[in-house]
Every structure is written in structure tokens, then in C-alpha cells.
Image (cartoon, rainbow, N blue to C red; front, side, top):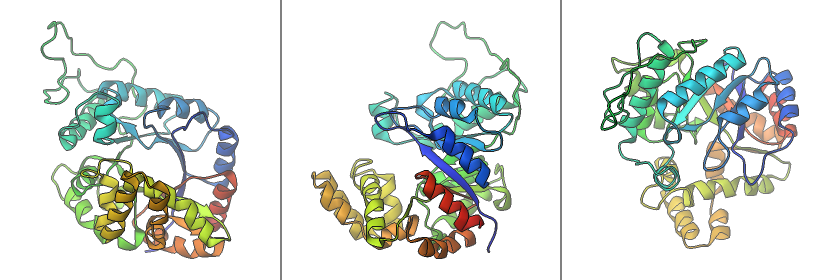
Amino acid sequence: MTKDLKLGWHIGYWGRSMPTGVPETLAMIESLGYDSVFTAESWGSDAISPLAWWGAGTTKLRLGTNIVQISARTPSATAMAAITMDHLSGGRFCLGLGVSGPQVVEGWYGQRFNKPLTRTREYVDIVRKVLAREERLTNDGPEYPIPARDGLGLGKALNVMTHPVRADLPIFLGAEGPKNVALAAEIADGWFPIFYAPRHEEMYARHLAEGFARPTARRRPEDFEILAMATTFIDDDIERAYDRARPTIALYVGGMGAQEMNFHADVFRRLGYERAVDEIQNLFLNGKQAEAIAAVPREMVDEICLVGPPAKIRDDLQAWRDSRVTTLIVGGAPDTLRTMAELLYG
């Protein structure tokens, strides 16, 4: 089914220092008809502060986080930030949440990674209670008991003082594994798949359908957003374009997680790249990063990325138009963002 496909810009999280030229780029993409802009966090810059600062110069773009890590803040604190951002933006904020992974959660935040599905469900439920503002906030737990247990016993149930702009502020979940994808379809307004292969949607369809079929499902398939990231490198030298995409895939498959628990690698295994994943992981984890990057096959790149000359990308975009994806999120320099608008909207 060919449909209108929206464009979003993924600023992401910072490296060693703050990126330059963001306000100018935001003005440009807003004029080009982009729908949204997203910030992220890992263990450096946070997702909300830059979005508030840069978003102040916009008037139409949806401002979203992709993603806020749930271990970084209590659900009440995240709800407060979401309410604040929605007021500041005039009702344009979208809250993207995700569990991250055990290395970051336990190694950086000092929190347990146990029961990520239970924690996510409870977290979202508390945020929605705060946004609804129907009663004083309490939660029986077990992950986030409110008022706290085993404290002084002086905790008081409170209601958020600032009235939310929207009780139904959109909440999107970042999810990779089958159970997490089903949970996103059940309790969220949309889904951020970190790696989406539009030509293999059957890999996700069953899990989404499972979530939509649950009695507590919040959305129907037709009003559920899928906001998919497509790393984009526009280059007339096609091999150079593939080489620019390979390092990120090699990092996520080979180095972003332990060998025995790497959710990113599992996605590519489900796509049928078991042998390539094993080779990339073994090389990366043995310090052979250059070889790991070189081992990423072209086919893996084309599954989730848009690379090559503009004519090739224009053809490849048809698979995304025909997919269930509602927003295509791209990154890159202003020239790339401008060309993508021309290819998709022109």
C-alpha cells in the first residue's frame, strides 16, 4: 500500500562535544515539510535539555525523544519533564521511552536490568496516571512503589501541580525483541524499531498483532505510529556509501552488548544473517574492528539503510512507502536532509 510517508530528523546524542548548526538545520527542515525531530541519550548528553533549547526556535515540528532511558529517571520525573516540554512547545512533544541494555542500565545508572517488560509496563502506566491527573498518584509496584516502602513512612500521595496540555500526550516505545514489540503495540501510541527491514515486515507483523489483540490494547493498527530509523548516505560512489554505513552496523552487532545478550545482533539473526552476525561479533570482540566492519555484507546494509546515488535511493524508498512505517527518521548533514525531502516529497 503506497501512502504518504512523513520525514523526521534524528539528531541523536552527542559525541565528545555539542553538534554545530542545529538551529539552522531545524529551520531548514521545517521549511521543507519535515514532520518531526528527535534527540537521544546514551551515557553523555541527555535527550530532553537539547530538545528544549533547540526546539524553542521551531513552530511546527513535533519534538520527540528517541529515546529517554527509563532507568535514568523515575517515572514521575519523566512525566514532569513531558508536561513541561508539552507546555513549552504548545502541545508538540512526543515522549519516546526505552529500557536500553544491561551494560548501560547496570554499568552506568547502577540500576537492575531485571524484568524489563514489567518495568516498562509499570513505568508507562505511572506516566499516564500523572498525565491523566484524575487522582493523587499511588502505585502498588512492584518495581516503582509510590509512596516508597521501607522509608520514613511520611510519603504523601500527590497530584501533579501543573495541569498537562494533553492527557493523551503520545508515548512511543523503543523495542527490538518480540515480547517488547508486542508490548509496544499494546500500551503505546507508536513504536521505534532501531532496525526496520521494510521488505521483511512479516518478521514484526505477528508480534504487533499479538499486542493489538490484547484486551488492554490502546491503539488499533491503523492509528498506531511506526517511526523507523533509516541510516542514509547519499553518494554517487556506491561502494563508498556502503563503507560509510558499515561501521555503525558493525558497532551495534559486534560491540553494543555482550556476546550472550545483544538485542541488536538478534534482529539481524532473525533476518537470516546468523553467519555474518557471528563473524562480525567474533572479530569485534577480539579487537579486530576494521575486519568486523569489512565483514558487514552489502545485503545487511540495504535491509535497513538508504545508501548510494539519489536514483538508487529513490527506487529503494518505494519499499518504505509500501510498508507499515508512518515516519521515516533520517540523520545526516543538511544536504542529505534536503535531498531526502526532494526524493520523498518532490
